[in-house]
Image 1 (spheres, rainbow over the protein chains, first blue to last red):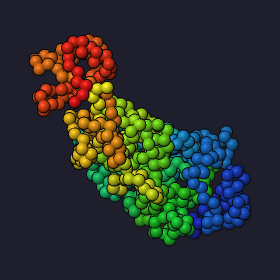
Image 2 (image 1 turned 180 degrees about the vertical axis):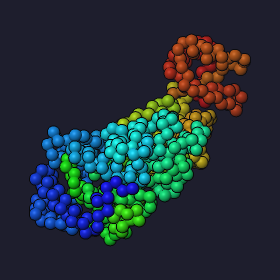
Image 3 (image 1 turned 45 degrees about the horizontal axis):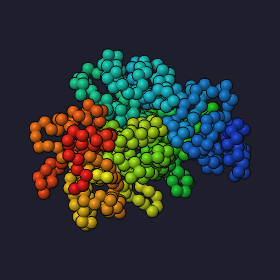
Image 4 (image 1 turned 90 degrees about the vertical axis):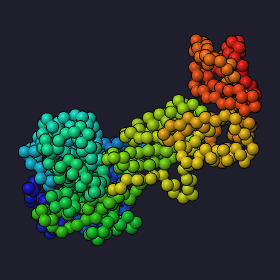
Length: 432
Length: 138
């Protein structure tokens, strides 16, 4: 079923006209209401009237994660605060997190695109949706929640974690849809086996997983483990949250809600448009958002676009699965981690030298982050108790900043290779 | 003064003990006692060597972190219950033992014990008063 056929199935010509009109509006809006964008446009001598159709998007300035940080918390809002009905924020980076605001209309649109995503995967109002994404500042939980309600499905807002409770609910409530990160889905699948629950007794049929990159191999594994069909949902809080795009039953790319989010794929070096099918950096412009519209937001996610109509009937553009990142950001158990965050955390601890290495691995199905810190004669103690205290201190500090649990390992002095140029700080052993 | 113990941070990896002992060998440092405390990923190598200060320097040159610490070396009487007497005495006087290991002196066959305690001076005084031989030099 298609949730909103007029919007999801329009011809490419209609699409272009619709997007052009919306782009003109959003550019006017940010020029008049967001000083950050007015300044950026004035710097290049660009006036709102210069943008006449969607192709003119190339003239517009980019927005980066750093711009959001510098305008923390509400600097990019285009409406008075009284119009903001909700705020979400990304996990804290070094002190400052990224804040996004929503007007009532934005929340409606958010619910709409998530409802479309559910529909894309075959979820109906008859389904019972167990939402095991975190609820709170993270957009995952509430985003998936509102969308499921909009669709009319029954929502179980269990949030993330508490695995034994998740298993109880799957059995007792007969959940038919599971929404969470792929790594948590894989973990639940193992927990079900360990608890010797007969999968035949579960009603689960669909899984909607996102917030971290995952491979087709992992999808097959989860599908077999949970006896479901798994779908990929993509989103980021800067743009809206989950629901920017979602895969359909054809499993051939993720349909982008391009009547709200205009995608571009740019060459990572030249920042010029790539041809359809070529992998580059995914850039989004929110063309209908009220509270916090963003022009050409650089996601740093690598993907390609496919404009061919899909066999499912939808004509909106599809993006490939995320192929990687154009920066050093890691996504660990759904949380964004920058190596620089770890560095600044370590620098605040007198015992820790800035010689560290991040080792990301997937143990079983869970992502692990090990931080190797070089031992230093200033705090080396011949008592294990003292060394463990140092370890705990580093662990607490890093965890409070990253928001995920980490393993701290002390390593011998000069174990970590010194580099003349850009230091190799990360070893990612995961196969994505 | 008394005997100094040399503690060395070592990774739990193949060849680390060989590395450390190679450095001792090259600098003509003799090992009198050796003990390793290990965790999954790393360990602390505790040794009593002939020239501890020289050893620290030699290790540092090769980027190995080490540290000297004051320890108590005792030569308990060779009779049943002597260690029990010593531990009871220390315990009754609120002295905690962080760790202990023993080694043999080849020359006279005596078995010495290295103790790391929370109050070395007090422990030493107490033990001496109770007739336990304290070794100050090897």
